[in-house]
Length: 240
Image 1 (cartoon, rainbow, N blue to C red):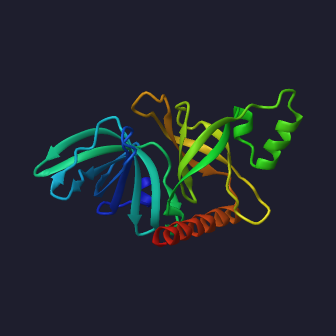
Image 2 (cartoon, rainbow, N blue to C red; image 1 turned 90 degrees about the horizontal axis):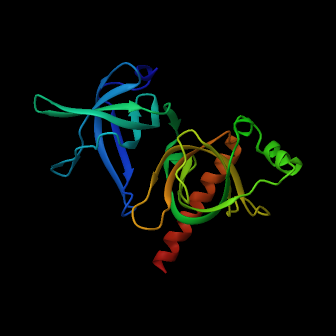
Image 3 (tube, rainbow, N blue to C red; image 1 turned 45 degrees about the vertical axis):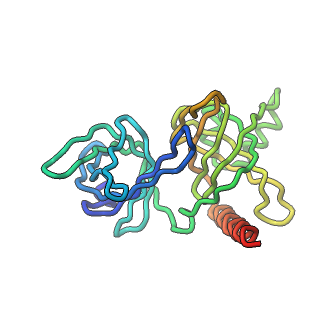
């Protein structure tokens, strides 16, 4: 499947957020070889003239620039070695390649309050979010929501600071305090955890990266329009 989309020589961006400083680190690399079992080899990236050795057993967000378009996935470094004068990292792709539009790729860095709850296995396969709300209303005990903060947002997913780290592939119902259209006070969506790690310091908080699933394309378009609208506001306020 990978070789149908990604080819040796394709450019790839590698992204990770420093858990201590919360700064986003992004490096550019190139696909060196497509292997079996959802594994690829890439050239170790450079930061200017400094070689960056990607950490073993660490997850990175990866963006592949291919002849078929722009694709994203999560990958984990499982090995690294030197071949001739090249330093190589072996990456195991942990999620499927997902095609994204360049507009969807754009991220809005803004703090947004959210309410969330973990979905049961039965709820996680629900195709309609309205059915989830109906299930909540008919439950003997109304499910409890917890508080969190979204720190960046895109048309495809978001990064959240929550009280707990959740396993990859956990499904979470999210309510965000944003208005995508007149008369709407919140945006509700199902997120699937693709990466989770505990932040440094004594806060006990955790960073959880999620991709939005089962979201109607019309709603995704409204979310993208909201992101660009807010970005324009932020730029205008910065100039004033």
